[in-house]
Length: 298
Ligand code: PAF
Image (cartoon, rainbow, N blue to C red; front, side):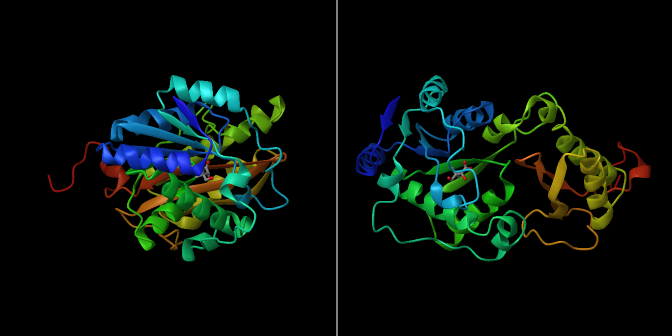
């Protein structure tokens, strides 16, 4: 694995690889790798010949009151893990390489960025869209892999690619979870042992809501109430949002219909640590009392 520190060198390498007919797959990350990141790097291998992982803690997606300075970093550990995962190039620029003096540009995506993460973190998605565009222009990938854990981010990046006609295919990889169901995240390291023990409630909330849907619940407010009830059972949790929404538009109809693809979205503070999680579900088209083996039309 080669570690590349400058934009010019990364662009030259990618151009050369494309001339050789290689398919490039990019895995954008902010580092402090865990098995979730490694699963993205391994998935990348399924889509192309060359895997480029980018490692950049992007300051423009953090608000001044957020954790840019304390965001966990372990560059030596990360490069060892990336190498072991079979990554070909680790693009690891400095902040001044990405945002030199005089840099003055940002990409804003409307609509889906106004709710949920975007409501709580109003400048976040501008920072994400801008850095991801830069990373695509630098690494020139045919495919890019993102984790489903940042669900709204995936929608934003798909919209970015669609609206700006970026020539890259976005692949979404499933959430990897710890034994108690907690979604893997670099920020989990902020959790002290006593709070870490309580973090499994997020997954429990998603599972209970999923069960209620399997048992026939279709009303959005009732599904949301199940999420809230679970989360409120841990006094140290402050709910930012916990809701069921259309998986593509993030709209919130009163009732979901058979065949609707929905996503349950959670964001909470557990102590001082902000955790997000989600689960996608297709509303079943059969009435539950007909039983699991019932097939429509037979
Ligand atoms: O998901 C992340 O780690 C970041 O938001 C990303 C996509 C690497 C952009 O900085």
